[in-house]
Length: 256
Image (spheres, rainbow, N blue to C red):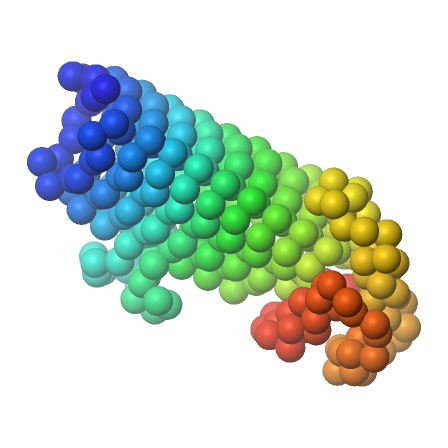
């Protein structure tokens, strides 16, 4: 299942059923778990661990050194979970010692062509990166977020669960869960109503999130005042608590 034209370092550890296409290059300190397919001309460098049943398409560059002038060859790493689809020309870099030394990608992510995930990023699970969406270093993207094509995210920003960024969004502040943003610089555009429907949120949950949106964005309140008001809402499914926790942890200010 390994094409004889592939170049695999003897120090790499590949499960017996890993499929590697012609002219792929896999360096030392790379571990690839069962069921993963590596397409032709893809390059994987380490230290890196690639989980199960991933599909890494041709010309992707996974686990190479961080694009950071401070990086001096320290042994940082990349961790990729299971069942991710990583399309053509995607680049994902390892971490730096200025952070935790690791870039982490969760499970079941859909990462389209030319997307870039920089050093020290944390990407959850079930995230969609449309073509050419790019994260600078130290960015966090939570579960079920969707990044539109050509979205650009400044370093140290966070994007909450179920958030949606429209194509060409330029994001320099944190994006709360459940919110749609657009523009350069990005501003809120409303609740991610269609995304919530697709993910099976009940009408009651969507209603309380509409109330939450109005409190954060339409009530002329400070973030602390908005957080206090949010805590007063009926929250049977815990979505408002996600918003409150996000507001408490935001570091770069909020897109609004």
